[in-house]
Image (cartoon, rainbow, N blue to C red; front, side, top):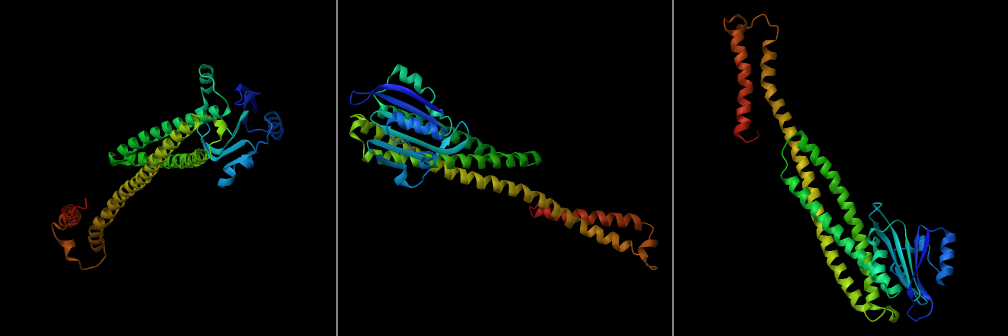
Length: 309
């Protein structure tokens, strides 16, 4: 899909600047967009390269900035996101809808941008704000999971809840990993831009870039903390599941041990010997039942005294 919008007059006061939005473009759309902006736009393979020299580079006056691993929240997938910033055009190449860009056009109507560089920085600022919201949401969810995990009650229903929580914690870890790639890609890209800001970005651009770099560094530290907490929570849920399983195994072990003495007694008295004095006792049957019951009660009392029950 190819969409072109006119932004404002370019920095040199000549031709109007363009905002070219490419979503999963075809080769024909790439060629058409390149012809309109006057420079070559990289294809999907070009914006997916992970080496740093391919992520950020100058091609003439155009600045190519790529994020090979970007979290597309709307589709819950990770894919490349590319920018090409030039004095007369901004090209955005994406795989899916970027939620951070929602409402950007309405904002531009209220506060028109000063050119492609200003629009690019606005997009990055919106992305950073959205990443902060996602991290805050993950932190709130993780706190709720932690509270539920350590306040859970024993039982079959609680075990099922822990198993469900284990899957959700795993999904949360996957999201944190995707956000990690996005944050570090943005941080490396903006650090490069901070050190080599083109003059045509404007006088206010260095200050805005430095603020973005500080925000990304702060979010990166927060994301690392969330990653550590997620690993702790994952280990805790696994430990609680193992404890519940050990309770079941303990009950089975106690039942098997308690069943051994009466089985031995019943087996002895069930043998078909001609001479067995107990068979002729007047109260032999009651004594046998009492011995079987006592052989069950005594191990149970011993286990309870040892704290195993």
